[in-house]
Length: 394
Image 1 (cartoon, rainbow, N blue to C red):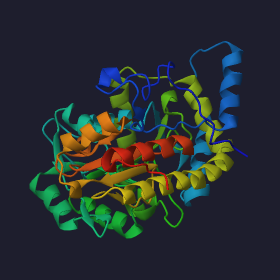
Image 2: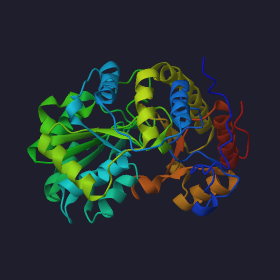
Image 3: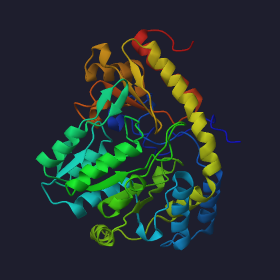
């Protein structure tokens, strides 16, 4: 029903992904598969709702009523069997915005904030830019699958006097979908040491068949007072530029403190178009998403085959997200050499592993593959040719 193969020209549209290569030190002709947005048109109901809003011609201040909250919580009830209370909802213009305000609201300058590396690089920024200390508990790669070193996790919390844990679930870039047992064990450790958990679940809708995303609070219902769940429809429905996210804070005092921190920034009313798009996506976008997910499997197949053709490379089998996390460490090259091959020879713009953690990400590259098959085939062919000097097509 949906044409995910359509190639949409994004150059010349002020696209961060396509139009800022020179500003970010990349060749202008590089094929960009770095930033986490799709080269796929958003669901038709979302487009129609935005067009109708635009045609109205008045773009004044907007707010939402109870119907919005019911649409959001209804989505999580249908998809994950978890229905948060509508009273818990606090909207923000993005999950990273929310994480930064969580850091400011619930920690003091100099406090330790725990992250699991390699991890989404804005996690470092919202901690360091607010004069808090990054405390890393490195994930362990065993048998091609990342695992949590729970001993290290707890030791770091105790030794570094950690006050806040930023959980990435599903995990970016390792593409792990955490099990109920893992989420419960992390929750118990944090509870034992008085650590607040902020769970970034922005990729929750992008989970592969055979895996199940479990909201942190569903796994830890007794810890409602000690967690904040950050969500958004922006990754699943390709509307990151509309700047909308939905955060659930069960504890009333924490909810009030979070809102007060947002008030300090001077932010109040939300983007009209973002609110319209979010509600429409949750009300009418499910069929589109259900068709998209198997389409993305085709892209993963292409990249898996390409990685298998490159000596010394392997794809870490993803469980969720639309990322491929590729391990080039057996090539025996430095990160600079790997980056040079990818940028100068393959003419690809990918995310280098070290930005997700200098040690934990060294030797890796992240590919965002939510694009038409033709673009991913082109990228795979370039990658194989750059490393092996031959076509990636079989």
